[in-house]
Length: 401
Ligand code: HEM
Image 1 (cartoon, rainbow, N blue to C red):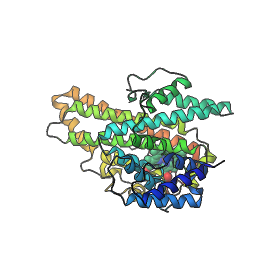
Image 2 (image 1 turned 60 degrees about the horizontal axis):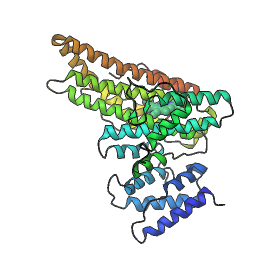
Image 3 (image 1 turned 30 degrees about the vertical axis):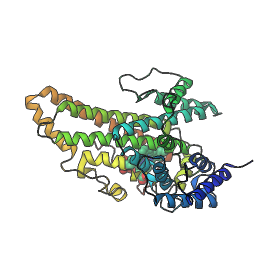
Image 4 (image 1 turned 135 degrees about the horizontal axis):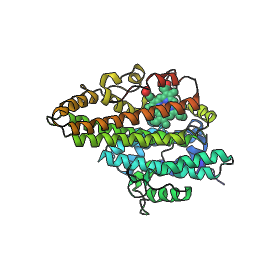
């Protein structure tokens, strides 16, 4: 019987032979993903490592049509091989750099929302299936409860459910059905590049059973943070217009609050991660900490401007990737609201409420993150070299707007 590694090696070998003759056809993503999952990228057999680096080297020299399957393969190989090439990064480990490139190819908010909903459906399905094999009753319950609660935020056709019409509480099998429907695009199947992005984006470094949960949760929250940053960037542009339209600003701020709310709900699943497993994952993924998160840096810097710069994050995320506009969105919105107060106090009131909604969800995300970090790593230093939960606690009260 052949092993997943042998199957992957054989398939990649055939693919590499084909590149010498012409276009090699689809890359064997699934087989490679299975081999990575069987070993973890840190313990991948030498031959497969070499083959993947060769495949990456070839694909980066090709000129590929953005959005095509070959383009997605090249961007995927770039992420997958980054730690094999001794160039680890958070964006590559979590594959969020690949997702960002894909989302920016077209209608960003739509693509981003679709992908984050698909990854959430995939996570819920994975966790519910895993829970059925869990012997420990308490573990099984907490995992399946967290997954079914998260499923209430999804709509089987539209992706994310509107905050005002979430599906009723339901059991695990109904939640799985809804996720299946979403992941199969109503039975039609996802387009090839999108299927690749969903199915092959768990570049685990270890064989710890909790690592897929960790990676998926980070991916979903990163996409939601990028979504929030997009809405806020748009709000910033509109707030600086000669006569800003208060209702459109309020709408964008509520959309931001919704993204942060969705992200916060994923933490319930993250909190089920086993601390011992997480310690092993951290040890295997040095150099890929969340301080390098561009989504969260963009979000915070757009809102707070220079006040959102901390030495720790500036070193990890450059100012070009996540700029600090002057005046910041927070300052701009304060001006708009003050001006509105004199001639349209109702609109000013709505805008203030929308600002409060964003701040409330931001606080909630940060508090939950801190709580989860305390539970899972306790009082040890952070992977980014900070003093860990103390660093998070020091910045807990800073509002976004
Ligand atoms: C196992 C669960 C988690 C633990 C134990 C944890 C722990 C930490 C710690 C200790 C820090 C401080 C920085 C450092 O690493 O030195 C941090 C920062 C951060 N984490 Fe997490 N985290 C967890 C999950 C997540 C998830 C799922 C996300 C989603 C993207 C996330 C996003 C962030 C961000 C954006 C920062 C930077 C915050 C800032 O600089 O203000 N974390 N985390």
